[in-house]
Length: 438
Ligand SMILES: *Cc1c(COP(=O)(O)O)cnc(C)c1O
Image (cartoon, rainbow, N blue to C red):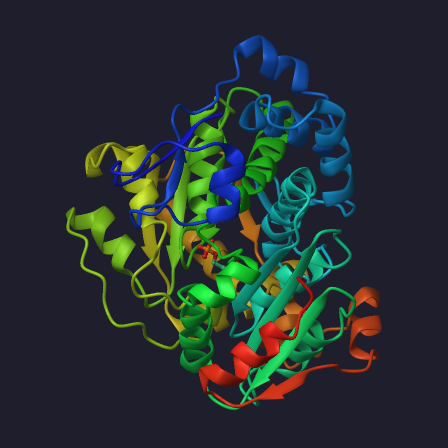
């Protein structure tokens, strides 16, 4: 499959190039030249398939002839070693739990698929690929555990010392083997600056093949379309004649963009709710047709604190820049911190189900949408983007209850931390990187 940049000024590229480059040289984001499409018959055949069957069918269309089918099938098999349950709350409301991967958040889907594609392409070229990431927590841990043990790749993570939670720090510093954590004496901006400097350091780049694995990579979005497709087919069975509504807690809008891709591919999806916190630039765009990114404001749902979402340009591209047609598929709803806490509490009281705050934003937005559109009988799916234990302060505040640590996480909490402390000057990062084998 061919990909081109949203700004359309640089040359079209293969899946391999789009994956290894991340961002196009013209600064745009890669999008498929034409969206793959599933016919009615193909979808009917997938209806009774497993998650992995559906994942493979979609991946095949994006990979084209770049990855042999047996290798692709193995890759999908290795990525999705955990469940994607659809937890039913009442007759027409579901929570799709995307937090059963190794780092307990949906970012595992994207990171694990990207890691294995990167490993496949690295082996093809017989070279070592070095992934360099600055992280304030969640993306870094998914990348660390995603790339862990993948041959021909290694990960260098930079995180700000003392500025991530203990659970996050354990996830960042315990993978070991081909994953190296650098604890930077500074803040997240220092980490980002150091990484940017490394990417423009020519002498370093002659020695190492660097890539960024960040959230704008198209190969992180492709696997996120799998769980929309999967859920839509499950629900088509249970609610014949009604297309499901997906409520998506959004920050950079990668997750929502992946949903739009699944719908455009032909999967039976009705509508999307873009659920945001006080960082509501996309919500306001959907209401007014004007995109005015704002300074990021801090909220309870930190993973959604993005003032200028990077995937917005992809969404615009998919709707030809037309806000009315985007509005036909997506409704934006913003939720306050107070409403979020209230929702965690009321859902717990009503269903004995503990939701993480990000998921609660999605649930609240779905409730609000239903109030504004009475009489529509669509099944609603809230994407649950994180396990509640990751945000147990907020849970404690809302329902005065501790969330038990899942088994996998307990193991990570008990592993010894391994990190190299560095200062915030570029020379220190450069010295570490030049000490790596080629
Ligand atoms: C990253 C993240 C989000 C936001 O996802 P986007 O794809 O950036 O919109 C929501 N919830 C959690 C828990 C996350 O980690």
